[in-house]
Image (cartoon, rainbow, N blue to C red):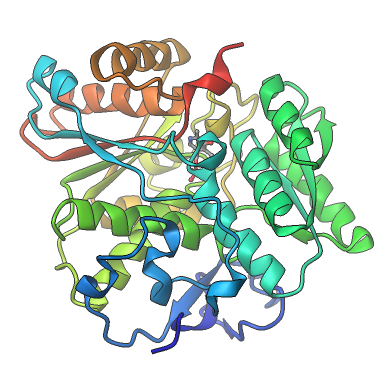
Length: 385
Ligand SMILES: *Cc1c(COP(=O)(O)O)cnc(C)c1O
Protein backbone atom coordinates (compact mmCIF):
# COMPACT_ATOMS: atom_id res chain seq x y z
CA UNK A 1 0.00 0.00 0.00
CA UNK A 2 1.16 3.55 -0.73
CA UNK A 3 2.62 5.53 2.15
CA UNK A 4 -0.20 8.06 1.75
CA UNK A 5 -3.59 7.55 0.10
CA UNK A 6 -3.90 11.27 -0.62
CA UNK A 7 -5.79 11.54 -3.91
CA UNK A 8 -6.83 15.15 -4.50
CA UNK A 9 -7.99 18.42 -2.93
CA UNK A 10 -11.63 19.45 -2.73
CA UNK A 11 -13.21 22.81 -2.00
CA UNK A 12 -15.28 22.83 1.19
CA UNK A 13 -17.64 25.42 -0.32
CA UNK A 14 -18.27 24.58 -3.98
CA UNK A 15 -16.85 21.05 -4.21
CA UNK A 16 -14.38 21.88 -7.01
CA UNK A 17 -11.50 19.41 -7.07
CA UNK A 18 -7.79 19.97 -7.67
CA UNK A 19 -4.71 17.85 -8.24
CA UNK A 20 -2.18 17.70 -5.43
CA UNK A 21 0.82 18.78 -7.52
CA UNK A 22 0.86 22.59 -7.66
CA UNK A 23 1.10 24.73 -4.52
CA UNK A 24 -2.44 25.88 -3.81
CA UNK A 25 -3.97 28.13 -1.21
CA UNK A 26 -7.77 28.28 -1.53
CA UNK A 27 -10.35 27.44 -4.19
CA UNK A 28 -9.52 29.42 -7.31
CA UNK A 29 -13.07 29.47 -8.69
CA UNK A 30 -14.29 33.04 -9.03
CA UNK A 31 -16.21 34.28 -5.99
CA UNK A 32 -15.61 31.06 -4.07
CA UNK A 33 -12.19 31.07 -2.36
CA UNK A 34 -13.34 28.26 -0.07
CA UNK A 35 -10.93 26.33 2.13
CA UNK A 36 -9.49 23.24 0.46
CA UNK A 37 -9.49 19.82 2.13
CA UNK A 38 -7.15 16.94 1.40
CA UNK A 39 -9.12 13.90 0.26
CA UNK A 40 -7.92 10.32 0.51
CA UNK A 41 -8.70 7.25 -1.53
CA UNK A 42 -9.32 5.33 1.63
CA UNK A 43 -8.02 1.89 0.99
CA UNK A 44 -9.01 -0.47 3.73
CA UNK A 45 -6.73 -0.02 6.68
CA UNK A 46 -6.91 -1.75 10.01
CA UNK A 47 -6.45 0.44 13.05
CA UNK A 48 -4.25 -2.34 14.42
CA UNK A 49 -1.75 -1.65 11.63
CA UNK A 50 -0.97 1.73 13.17
CA UNK A 51 -0.55 0.42 16.71
CA UNK A 52 3.20 -0.13 16.84
CA UNK A 53 4.20 3.14 15.19
CA UNK A 54 5.79 6.17 16.90
CA UNK A 55 3.25 8.51 18.45
CA UNK A 56 3.61 11.50 16.15
CA UNK A 57 1.17 13.00 13.66
CA UNK A 58 2.72 10.69 11.06
CA UNK A 59 1.51 7.59 12.90
CA UNK A 60 -1.53 7.89 10.63
CA UNK A 61 0.53 8.29 7.46
CA UNK A 62 -1.92 6.58 5.09
CA UNK A 63 -4.33 9.40 6.02
CA UNK A 64 -1.74 12.14 6.00
CA UNK A 65 -0.50 14.09 3.00
CA UNK A 66 3.24 13.34 2.83
CA UNK A 67 3.69 11.01 -0.12
CA UNK A 68 7.03 9.56 1.00
CA UNK A 69 8.66 9.26 4.42
CA UNK A 70 11.64 11.30 3.18
CA UNK A 71 9.36 14.32 2.68
CA UNK A 72 8.48 14.57 6.35
CA UNK A 73 9.79 17.47 8.42
CA UNK A 74 9.16 16.43 12.02
CA UNK A 75 10.16 17.64 15.45
CA UNK A 76 8.20 14.88 17.20
CA UNK A 77 4.85 16.70 17.23
CA UNK A 78 1.64 14.97 18.32
CA UNK A 79 1.08 11.89 20.44
CA UNK A 80 0.26 14.04 23.45
CA UNK A 81 -1.27 12.55 26.60
CA UNK A 82 -4.98 12.31 27.32
CA UNK A 83 -4.99 12.86 31.08
CA UNK A 84 -7.78 11.76 33.38
CA UNK A 85 -8.29 14.88 35.52
CA UNK A 86 -9.08 12.96 38.68
CA UNK A 87 -8.63 15.68 41.29
CA UNK A 88 -10.33 18.45 39.34
CA UNK A 89 -13.02 15.94 38.40
CA UNK A 90 -13.55 14.89 42.02
CA UNK A 91 -13.81 18.50 43.17
CA UNK A 92 -16.52 19.11 40.61
CA UNK A 93 -18.25 15.74 40.82
CA UNK A 94 -17.19 14.97 37.26
CA UNK A 95 -15.66 11.51 37.32
CA UNK A 96 -15.03 11.39 33.57
CA UNK A 97 -13.23 14.67 33.02
CA UNK A 98 -10.16 14.54 30.77
CA UNK A 99 -7.53 16.99 29.59
CA UNK A 100 -5.90 16.62 26.18
CA UNK A 101 -2.60 18.16 27.14
CA UNK A 102 -0.97 19.81 24.10
CA UNK A 103 1.66 21.85 25.93
CA UNK A 104 4.34 19.21 25.39
CA UNK A 105 4.39 19.71 21.64
CA UNK A 106 7.48 21.22 19.98
CA UNK A 107 7.36 25.02 20.42
CA UNK A 108 4.92 24.58 23.31
CA UNK A 109 1.58 24.41 21.54
CA UNK A 110 -0.55 22.32 19.23
CA UNK A 111 0.33 24.69 16.39
CA UNK A 112 3.27 22.31 15.87
CA UNK A 113 0.88 19.68 14.51
CA UNK A 114 -0.52 21.97 11.84
CA UNK A 115 2.72 23.62 10.84
CA UNK A 116 4.56 20.30 10.85
CA UNK A 117 2.19 19.07 8.17
CA UNK A 118 2.01 22.37 6.27
CA UNK A 119 5.77 22.94 6.13
CA UNK A 120 6.31 19.32 5.10
CA UNK A 121 3.95 19.75 2.15
CA UNK A 122 5.06 23.26 1.21
CA UNK A 123 8.65 22.06 0.93
CA UNK A 124 7.65 18.86 -0.89
CA UNK A 125 5.67 20.85 -3.46
CA UNK A 126 8.49 23.30 -4.11
CA UNK A 127 7.97 26.34 -1.85
CA UNK A 128 11.17 28.12 -0.84
CA UNK A 129 9.80 30.97 1.28
CA UNK A 130 6.88 30.83 3.68
CA UNK A 131 4.84 33.67 5.16
CA UNK A 132 2.02 33.84 7.65
CA UNK A 133 0.11 36.08 10.01
CA UNK A 134 0.06 34.95 13.63
CA UNK A 135 -1.57 35.79 16.93
CA UNK A 136 1.42 34.14 18.63
CA UNK A 137 2.02 30.41 18.61
CA UNK A 138 1.59 29.78 14.88
CA UNK A 139 4.53 32.06 14.13
CA UNK A 140 6.86 30.21 16.47
CA UNK A 141 5.82 26.83 15.10
CA UNK A 142 6.13 27.95 11.48
CA UNK A 143 9.55 29.44 12.16
CA UNK A 144 10.79 26.27 13.85
CA UNK A 145 9.60 23.92 11.10
CA UNK A 146 10.89 26.28 8.41
CA UNK A 147 14.28 26.22 10.12
CA UNK A 148 14.21 22.42 10.23
CA UNK A 149 13.19 22.35 6.56
CA UNK A 150 15.77 24.92 5.46
CA UNK A 151 13.09 27.33 4.22
CA UNK A 152 12.80 31.07 4.67
CA UNK A 153 9.97 32.23 6.95
CA UNK A 154 8.28 35.64 7.21
CA UNK A 155 6.07 36.17 10.24
CA UNK A 156 3.59 39.05 10.65
CA UNK A 157 2.29 39.59 14.18
CA UNK A 158 0.41 42.28 16.07
CA UNK A 159 2.87 44.65 17.76
CA UNK A 160 1.29 43.99 21.16
CA UNK A 161 1.82 40.20 21.00
CA UNK A 162 3.83 39.06 24.07
CA UNK A 163 7.54 39.52 23.43
CA UNK A 164 8.39 35.85 23.81
CA UNK A 165 6.66 35.04 20.52
CA UNK A 166 8.84 37.51 18.65
CA UNK A 167 12.00 36.32 20.39
CA UNK A 168 11.42 32.69 19.51
CA UNK A 169 10.60 33.46 15.86
CA UNK A 170 13.82 35.40 15.51
CA UNK A 171 15.81 32.67 17.23
CA UNK A 172 14.52 30.23 14.60
CA UNK A 173 15.78 32.59 11.93
CA UNK A 174 12.42 33.99 10.77
CA UNK A 175 11.98 37.56 9.58
CA UNK A 176 9.43 39.21 11.91
CA UNK A 177 7.26 42.19 11.00
CA UNK A 178 5.30 43.85 13.82
CA UNK A 179 1.97 45.21 12.68
CA UNK A 180 -0.12 47.89 14.27
CA UNK A 181 -3.33 45.88 14.09
CA UNK A 182 -4.80 42.41 14.59
CA UNK A 183 -4.15 39.04 12.97
CA UNK A 184 -6.43 39.76 10.03
CA UNK A 185 -4.53 42.99 9.33
CA UNK A 186 -1.36 40.88 9.36
CA UNK A 187 -3.04 38.45 6.96
CA UNK A 188 -3.82 41.26 4.54
CA UNK A 189 -0.17 42.35 4.55
CA UNK A 190 0.94 38.83 3.69
CA UNK A 191 -1.64 38.67 0.90
CA UNK A 192 -0.48 41.99 -0.54
CA UNK A 193 3.21 41.11 -0.57
CA UNK A 194 3.33 37.42 -1.25
CA UNK A 195 3.29 37.42 -5.06
CA UNK A 196 6.03 40.02 -5.43
CA UNK A 197 8.15 38.29 -2.78
CA UNK A 198 7.55 34.71 -3.91
CA UNK A 199 6.13 33.68 -0.56
CA UNK A 200 3.81 30.74 0.00
CA UNK A 201 1.07 31.79 2.42
CA UNK A 202 0.59 29.22 5.21
CA UNK A 203 -2.31 31.03 6.93
CA UNK A 204 -4.56 28.48 8.54
CA UNK A 205 -7.26 27.09 6.25
CA UNK A 206 -5.86 29.19 3.41
CA UNK A 207 -3.69 26.20 2.61
CA UNK A 208 -4.89 22.60 2.79
CA UNK A 209 -2.47 20.93 5.19
CA UNK A 210 -2.42 22.66 8.57
CA UNK A 211 -5.84 21.17 9.20
CA UNK A 212 -4.43 17.74 8.33
CA UNK A 213 -1.82 18.07 11.05
CA UNK A 214 -4.39 19.14 13.58
CA UNK A 215 -6.92 16.46 12.65
CA UNK A 216 -4.59 13.92 14.25
CA UNK A 217 -5.96 15.05 17.63
CA UNK A 218 -9.18 13.33 16.57
CA UNK A 219 -7.37 10.09 15.78
CA UNK A 220 -5.56 10.22 19.11
CA UNK A 221 -8.76 10.83 21.08
CA UNK A 222 -10.41 7.83 19.46
CA UNK A 223 -7.43 5.58 20.04
CA UNK A 224 -6.99 6.66 23.66
CA UNK A 225 -10.68 6.10 24.39
CA UNK A 226 -10.51 2.57 22.97
CA UNK A 227 -11.97 3.56 19.58
CA UNK A 228 -14.93 5.41 20.97
CA UNK A 229 -15.37 9.17 21.18
CA UNK A 230 -16.13 11.30 24.24
CA UNK A 231 -19.51 12.94 24.83
CA UNK A 232 -18.23 16.51 24.76
CA UNK A 233 -15.11 18.15 23.29
CA UNK A 234 -14.36 21.63 24.61
CA UNK A 235 -12.14 23.57 22.25
CA UNK A 236 -10.72 27.08 22.66
CA UNK A 237 -11.29 28.48 19.20
CA UNK A 238 -9.29 30.95 17.18
CA UNK A 239 -9.21 29.94 13.52
CA UNK A 240 -11.00 26.73 14.46
CA UNK A 241 -8.41 24.54 12.76
CA UNK A 242 -8.39 21.81 15.39
CA UNK A 243 -12.16 21.67 15.71
CA UNK A 244 -12.56 21.42 11.94
CA UNK A 245 -9.71 18.92 11.71
CA UNK A 246 -11.06 16.61 14.40
CA UNK A 247 -14.48 16.58 12.77
CA UNK A 248 -12.82 15.61 9.49
CA UNK A 249 -10.90 12.87 11.28
CA UNK A 250 -14.09 11.46 12.81
CA UNK A 251 -15.58 11.13 9.32
CA UNK A 252 -12.45 9.45 7.97
CA UNK A 253 -12.37 6.98 10.85
CA UNK A 254 -16.03 6.11 10.40
CA UNK A 255 -15.47 5.45 6.70
CA UNK A 256 -12.63 3.10 7.63
CA UNK A 257 -14.86 1.31 10.14
CA UNK A 258 -12.63 2.33 13.05
CA UNK A 259 -15.47 4.07 14.93
CA UNK A 260 -19.24 4.23 14.68
CA UNK A 261 -21.48 7.15 13.81
CA UNK A 262 -21.69 8.64 17.32
CA UNK A 263 -20.08 12.07 17.60
CA UNK A 264 -19.17 14.31 20.52
CA UNK A 265 -20.94 17.61 21.03
CA UNK A 266 -18.33 20.10 19.90
CA UNK A 267 -18.01 23.19 22.05
CA UNK A 268 -16.30 26.34 20.82
CA UNK A 269 -14.93 28.59 23.56
CA UNK A 270 -13.89 32.17 22.88
CA UNK A 271 -12.97 35.22 24.94
CA UNK A 272 -15.62 37.73 25.92
CA UNK A 273 -13.45 40.37 24.24
CA UNK A 274 -13.34 38.47 20.93
CA UNK A 275 -16.36 36.27 20.37
CA UNK A 276 -17.41 36.17 16.73
CA UNK A 277 -18.35 32.47 16.83
CA UNK A 278 -20.60 32.47 19.93
CA UNK A 279 -22.31 35.57 18.54
CA UNK A 280 -22.94 34.06 15.11
CA UNK A 281 -24.01 30.72 16.61
CA UNK A 282 -26.49 32.37 18.96
CA UNK A 283 -27.93 34.30 16.03
CA UNK A 284 -28.23 31.17 13.90
CA UNK A 285 -25.91 32.59 11.24
CA UNK A 286 -23.90 30.56 8.72
CA UNK A 287 -20.92 32.94 8.85
CA UNK A 288 -19.54 35.30 11.47
CA UNK A 289 -19.08 39.06 11.40
CA UNK A 290 -15.65 40.52 12.20
CA UNK A 291 -15.53 41.24 15.94
CA UNK A 292 -14.47 44.87 16.41
CA UNK A 293 -11.94 45.98 19.04
CA UNK A 294 -10.98 42.38 19.70
CA UNK A 295 -9.05 42.04 22.93
CA UNK A 296 -8.03 39.20 25.27
CA UNK A 297 -4.76 38.09 26.80
CA UNK A 298 -5.34 34.65 25.29
CA UNK A 299 -3.56 35.59 22.08
CA UNK A 300 -4.58 32.35 20.36
CA UNK A 301 -8.21 33.42 20.69
CA UNK A 302 -7.68 36.93 19.34
CA UNK A 303 -9.03 36.12 15.89
CA UNK A 304 -11.78 38.60 14.98
CA UNK A 305 -12.98 36.55 12.03
CA UNK A 306 -11.93 33.00 11.24
CA UNK A 307 -11.42 32.30 7.53
CA UNK A 308 -13.36 29.04 7.75
CA UNK A 309 -16.04 30.31 10.15
CA UNK A 310 -18.68 28.65 7.94
CA UNK A 311 -17.15 25.25 8.70
CA UNK A 312 -16.92 25.90 12.45
CA UNK A 313 -20.56 26.96 12.62
CA UNK A 314 -21.70 24.00 10.53
CA UNK A 315 -19.89 21.56 12.81
CA UNK A 316 -21.33 23.17 15.95
CA UNK A 317 -24.82 22.78 14.48
CA UNK A 318 -24.30 19.23 13.23
CA UNK A 319 -22.87 18.08 16.53
CA UNK A 320 -25.57 19.86 18.55
CA UNK A 321 -22.72 21.67 20.22
CA UNK A 322 -22.36 24.96 22.00
CA UNK A 323 -20.43 28.20 21.66
CA UNK A 324 -19.75 30.37 24.68
CA UNK A 325 -17.41 32.97 26.10
CA UNK A 326 -15.31 33.40 29.20
CA UNK A 327 -13.66 36.54 30.52
CA UNK A 328 -9.91 36.98 30.91
CA UNK A 329 -10.31 36.88 34.71
CA UNK A 330 -12.15 33.57 34.41
CA UNK A 331 -9.33 32.25 32.23
CA UNK A 332 -6.78 33.18 34.90
CA UNK A 333 -8.85 31.32 37.47
CA UNK A 334 -9.09 28.32 35.13
CA UNK A 335 -5.33 28.34 34.62
CA UNK A 336 -4.79 28.35 38.39
CA UNK A 337 -7.23 25.50 38.93
CA UNK A 338 -5.64 23.33 36.27
CA UNK A 339 -2.22 24.07 37.73
CA UNK A 340 -3.03 23.56 41.42
CA UNK A 341 -5.34 20.55 40.95
CA UNK A 342 -3.71 18.73 38.07
CA UNK A 343 -0.15 20.01 37.83
CA UNK A 344 -0.75 21.52 34.41
CA UNK A 345 0.46 25.07 33.82
CA UNK A 346 -2.00 25.71 31.02
CA UNK A 347 -2.14 28.44 28.45
CA UNK A 348 -4.99 30.91 29.04
CA UNK A 349 -6.78 29.16 26.18
CA UNK A 350 -6.74 25.93 28.21
CA UNK A 351 -7.96 27.82 31.27
CA UNK A 352 -10.78 29.16 29.11
CA UNK A 353 -11.83 25.68 28.08
CA UNK A 354 -12.03 24.48 31.69
CA UNK A 355 -14.01 27.53 32.78
CA UNK A 356 -16.41 26.89 29.92
CA UNK A 357 -17.04 23.36 31.19
CA UNK A 358 -18.12 24.70 34.58
CA UNK A 359 -20.49 27.15 32.91
CA UNK A 360 -22.05 24.44 30.75
CA UNK A 361 -22.55 22.22 33.78
CA UNK A 362 -24.16 25.10 35.69
CA UNK A 363 -26.46 25.75 32.73
CA UNK A 364 -27.46 22.09 32.57
CA UNK A 365 -25.95 21.71 29.10
CA UNK A 366 -23.33 19.19 30.20
CA UNK A 367 -24.10 16.41 32.64
CA UNK A 368 -21.54 15.80 35.39
CA UNK A 369 -21.38 12.12 34.47
CA UNK A 370 -20.52 12.71 30.84
CA UNK A 371 -17.14 12.04 29.33
CA UNK A 372 -15.76 15.52 28.74
CA UNK A 373 -12.45 16.46 27.12
CA UNK A 374 -10.92 19.86 27.81
CA UNK A 375 -8.26 20.96 25.34
CA UNK A 376 -5.22 22.55 26.91
CA UNK A 377 -3.75 23.82 23.69
CA UNK A 378 -0.42 25.21 24.84
CA UNK A 379 1.99 25.94 27.63
CA UNK A 380 1.40 28.72 30.13
CA UNK A 381 5.09 29.63 30.11
CA UNK A 382 4.72 31.98 27.16
CA UNK A 383 2.18 34.19 28.93
CA UNK A 384 3.97 35.11 32.13
CA UNK A 385 4.66 38.75 31.14
C1 LIG B 1 -3.89 29.05 17.94
C2 LIG B 1 -4.27 28.67 19.31
C3 LIG B 1 -5.59 28.33 19.61
C4 LIG B 1 -6.69 28.34 18.58
O1 LIG B 1 -6.50 27.30 17.66
P1 LIG B 1 -7.37 27.14 16.36
O2 LIG B 1 -7.29 25.69 15.99
O3 LIG B 1 -6.79 28.01 15.32
O4 LIG B 1 -8.75 27.54 16.68
C5 LIG B 1 -5.87 27.94 20.91
N1 LIG B 1 -4.91 27.90 21.85
C6 LIG B 1 -3.63 28.21 21.60
C7 LIG B 1 -2.62 28.14 22.70
C8 LIG B 1 -3.26 28.61 20.31
O5 LIG B 1 -2.00 28.93 20.05
